[in-house]
Length: 198
Image (cartoon, rainbow, N blue to C red; front, side):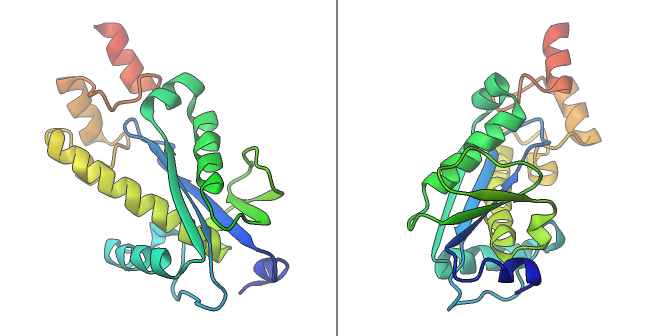
């Protein structure tokens, strides 16, 4: 436990993180986690710094040992309608609302907080500073990565299993050649431009 977390000792604390703000395709996925102090989980870290195998192991461990956890999302239609920032805030609200017990305080990765019914604080680089946020980042990333791998089965020519919907050269080339799928975000630049050209 670092100094930052020590200041919240004795408080029923939830950590929240999101995955999928940058991709051109798929939902934005959020998770909220209340860790159990009596069942600590070793090796929690920012999900991006872990290997796939380590993430998968921690994913199962978090779901088994956390006091509470929830995964939520905003879908492609909501992203296009609200914009990615507001859709992310909505998905975070949904994740926190699903927690039982209800947290007394919520720490959010990043620089802004969604509207919640309990006090909250944004923590820049929280996924590497706060264990509960690290746990949330792992749940969100593994969930979204697996969904993109499933989408790859439906649309094998786009490379979703590899780039997870992010605008890589391979993805942009496939988009140009094949056009957008129903899972692409119409409001995002490269997809929007293609649709305008049609």
